[in-house]
Structures are given as structure tokens and as C-alpha cells.
Length: 362
Ligand SMILES: NC(=O)c1ccc[n+]([C@@H]2O[C@H](COP(=O)([O-])OP(=O)(O)OC[C@H]3O[C@@H](n4cnc5c(N)ncnc54)[C@H](OP(=O)(O)O)[C@@H]3O)[C@@H](O)[C@H]2O)c1
Image (cartoon, rainbow, N blue to C red; front, side):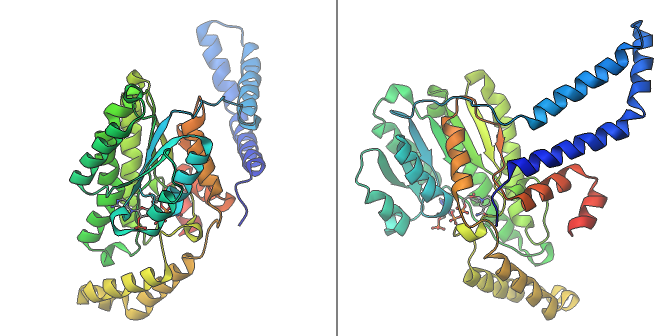
């Protein structure tokens, strides 16, 4: 599938702004004329004001992103969670290539996981692999000790923390147990909060960056994905609050909201979906089973299995924005790496009245 076409986005935004201008065009001049006459200004200025507002808006929409400068990477230290596979593993290698010193937290380092082995095989002082289960208080504390002890320049602290570790599942609310909600939130949400709290003193020391991996499903609901959405909406809320608190420390908090990259990473597998489907059906109450029926349920599982091979197959849009968040002098608050279909869907779901948006997509 094609990767985001910024020109298409621009065209859509320009169309939207034109539509808004036409709609408002009938009322706005009258409202402004009234305001101007109340304020004692000549009414002629109202049409000039409209043209000026419109011109500034068009300029804002149509302008490509300005070069924002980059920070030097040499001597800068970044910790990434969830480096066993997917975005975490790719990011660890990419940041290492850019010159960062990388602490790569792996869930399976102690079990000789493939990702940990691959990173260790680089045999480089700037690539340090550590055991890190974000759900374990003990392992997080040990990780802070390990990073602190291994900082080349302890006075500089930690430039970047990337909360990437995450898991996902599927299942409609009535089929999803409370334990599943807790299991997903334990990694995605509480893991993010636990690790962030533990490493913030080191990040504050370097006036660095906290990067949180949310999702487009942290901005919009989706049938059969409530446990994941709940955890990612939580990540969004946590990042927004932290960002506001961190201004005074000159620490930047950045949220990444990828679209569908399922085919590119290991977050879902067909076998995993099949197994999870069986477990859900067995563990669900008889009432729910009878009400929904096996045919309906099997159809949902089959749809999810088909979904596993969907989405963008190339991780680079996500890796590039993660790198931008850590290297740009003026990083964005949010990045939305996704294909055009997902981008339009997020805009529709988050900006149109729910009754209309739901009719389009559900
Ligand atoms: N792929 C997408 O379409 C997509 C879209 C939006 C957001 N995201 C987010 O991107 C992040 C990375 O996911 P991914 O797609 O790259 O999937 P992935 O390939 O499964 O990577 C997630 C990594 O987190 C690790 N992990 C799981 N539980 C952990 C724990 N308790 N402590 C530490 N690490 C743990 C996994 O280890 P194991 O492999 O050993 O389980 C895995 O290496 C996640 O936060 C995900 O929600 C992904």
C-alpha cells in the first residue's frame, strides 16, 4: 500500500478549507461587520480581515514542513524498550547507525532471544543490550542502575527514552475478559508509566526527550480492539499531561501514532489470532456464545486473520519519525506515520460528528 502522500493531504486540507470558507462566507462577513461596528471600526475592514485570515490559513496548510535543524548525535544516549522485534529492533539499529549510544531493552535477552542476539552481534560499545521487562519493577530498577553505571558521561544523563514495548489482541467487549484488558494495559500503559517515571530524572538531567509509542487507535475507537484502544488512549493521556509538566524542565514529550503496520512487525500472527480465538470462545459464558453464535464468532476470527497481512509492509515511515523526534531541534508534538487510507479515517473519526463517522466506517 502507498505510503502517506503529503500532497494528497494538502489537497484534502485545501478542499476542506475552501468548503469551510464557502459555508462561512455567507455568515462571517455579517458577524464581523457587526463586531467591527460594535468596536467602532469602519465596517470596510471586515472583508480585509476575512481575506487575511484565509490567506494565513492557506499558507499554513500548503507550506511544506520547514527544515527544523538537527542536534548532534555523538555522545547522546537513548534507551528503547521492546527491542526484540519490530519497530524497537529496527529503531535500535537505525539510531546506532546515526551515531547514538543505544541501550536496547529486550524482553528475551536472558533467554537468548533473536533480537537481543542480533544487536549483541554488532559488538559495539555504542550498542548495549539489557534485559528489560517493562512489567517488572525489579527489572526496571536494575535497568536504571545499569544505564546509570554505563553512561560514558554521567553528567549528561539520558537524551532519549523511547517507550516502544507493546502487545495487542482482538475480541469484542463481550468476549474480552477483564484479565485481558489488564494484561494489555500492563505492558502498553503501566509499562510506559513505570519506565518513564524511573528514567525521568536522567532525562531531565539532559533536557532530553520522552517518546511514547501510541497508535492511531489511541485517537479513535475500533470494533474488536477495545483492550488495545483503552491502553493506547491511556498512553495519549499520559503523554499529554507529562508534556505539559515537562516544559519547565525543557524536556520534550512526543507521541507517535502509527497507522496500520501490522504486516511489517510481529505484533500479530495468524497462529496467534487462531489460538486467541479458540481461547476466547472456550472462556466465554454460554449466554454470550448463544447470543452471538459460532458462525458470527468464526467470521470475526477469519476477518482478524486476514487483517494480519494488511497495512504498510515497510517500517521506515515509523522509524524515520521516531528518529526525527530524537534528532530534530524542534520535534513535533505528534507524528502520524500512516498510509492515506488510515489518515483519512483518523481525520473522519476524530473530527466529524460520531453519528456520521460511525455510519461511514462501521
Ligand atoms: N505494528 C503496528 O501496526 C503498530 C501500529 C501502531 C502502534 N504500534 C505500537 O508499536 C510498538 C511496537 O510494536 P511492533 O508493531 O513493533 O510489534 P512487535 O514486533 O511485537 O514489537 C513489540 C516488542 O515489545 C516486546 N514486549 C512485549 N511485552 C514486553 C514487556 N513486558 N516488556 C518489554 N518488552 C515487551 C515484544 O517482545 P516479544 O517479541 O518477545 O513479545 C516485542 O519485541 C507497540 O507499542 C505497538 O503498540 C504498532
